[in-house]
Length: 277
Image 1 (tube, rainbow, N blue to C red):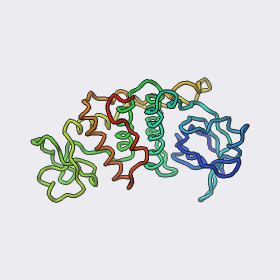
Image 2: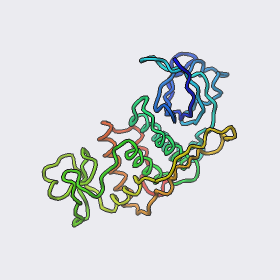
Image 3: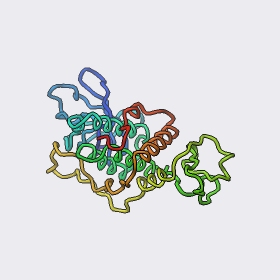
């Protein structure tokens, strides 16, 4: 057993007993973990209200061996998610982010850049950023950072450039990218998407090519301020029409469903139009 200290985002809490919780956390250094927080349900518990959903906190835990739950010993609030105070869309967006991180990431598999990207997305949603585009960027960056970047130009079967002689391209949900006209007849689990939507997807999934440094390890953080990160997610927002948004949103929904093997519950609450904030 050893003590570990890191920064974490609260993804879920489940009652364990009358006084304790099991918390699922996305951490900067340890990946996704589950831990027992003894006394967290007490009115004057040891965690000072830091374990609300999507709160960002500095934690210390005892790393237990094997399948035993880690033991959370300390949690200090750094940021509180306040999307519910702004709009229902922002609250739903936060819940969607938490659900997707639980479904996409394996336990004990650190992804520092994904952690920082998540902080940046939460900052946009908790502040004044565009909800619909932020969630497109979040989904596309999750695919890229977890090794599932969609192929938007070359055929996923033969590797040649896909022809643009039709308005819509065939997209393989299994292969994770476009399929050329020659290879299309031999493939299954296809959908179509406009080339404009695929071009937008390529921008949303692009690498910012910048050093990522989180800003949560200082003592001056104000829990009432929106989360912030140096990950420049706002630079990934291309210009797009409502039609392109609907096409791309549908493409990402189907791609993620195929990847995780189920339809996320919060997918039904995603913005249905581009200017939904």
